[in-house]
Image (cartoon, rainbow, N blue to C red; front, top):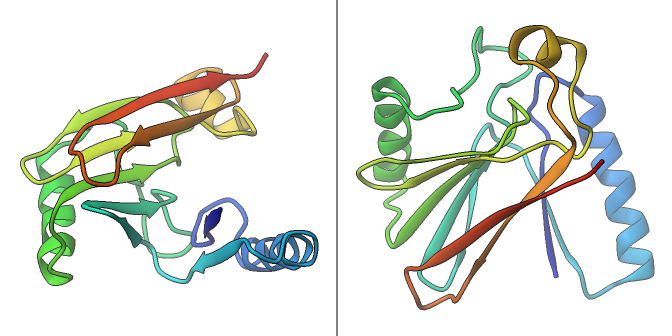
Length: 157
């Protein structure tokens, strides 16, 4: 089991790091075989077989006026393509983000762009700007050497 946390968000600020560190300590104590990564960048990535997953909150706590959009647009595609090219990423590339607390899937020329729901559900800002969203979790199931990905959402009541 590998756990990847995104700390650069507009929600928790510097507390994100301390909360994830506490979670890491508890999990490492109870389950020492778990690998735990706390991303220290706006976008980080992991590779499993021929799949590369870029993961981000979608809006940082400092520099971004607007976060990455729910649906992929030209500006965001260029931004992500530059990241892919800078890091020389190859294979089946997916971008996973959660800032808008909704499930949505778009496809760019080089990657799959996925928004996932929030375990928390709606914040006041989300409700005022996008409506009430149910808490949930997005998941992807794939074979590491196959290009296919099956994704879904579990919504909580």
